[in-house]
Length: 339
Image (tube, rainbow, N blue to C red):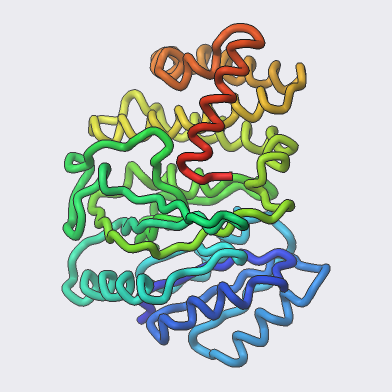
């Protein structure tokens, strides 16, 4: 039995994928490493995946598919996963070996004691190129440490502090049962990966270790700000999909409801900031359209988001209002270290 399945979506990743794979190999036979070659054509990604499958049979598996984008690569990993738990590690990222062993020890304890666990949360580190001090996303204020807890036990999420794909490990069967399927040829679907399963999560555990190392700094990365502005339509699509999965205002558990709404608030803010930073009338019109669509489709949610702290900031009038929002964004960006 595999304790953990790790999917590595790879697209022309020859330059860095081996570092990622090697960091995961330290997990040994309990881990299944699914190297998903998403139709790479420009380098040796496919050959490297096959080489690792040959060198580490029973641990590494090479999965080849036509190009479907990051989401479809995650889908392929999930379809092929046999581990009790499922994790995604992007090919330019890696994991810390010491924290990795603690993660496996924790998962092992739940499996062999027959105890239920739907989601394990760990810290992640922004490995920002050129930064002397690495920012760490921790969850001390939000979650109890080293114990099983439910949504009623969740504490306080600070602005900018929310669960990302980098920090979460889900129970594999939960993802399959909730029908998670990420859209093809769409960027920023990692938000859907986290958001859609959350109402199905009952038992959680926060392990306070700096496990995931999230590399940011390449000019062609999807999270590079200029790239995100160029792909604002993708961000808008993901946000619309997330708004449609649930009526977050009607979720019965108050802590879960609050967090789901807060997550949507962040997504609306990101779209608004990108539109404003682009400086184009076309993107400002798209921002306005998104807010108007939400108002028509779900007025109570629109009221909550539009007149919340971030919603008011996103809709300050005039050029001065937009400049004030960007200033606040830059301060938050510097504090949290995101791209």
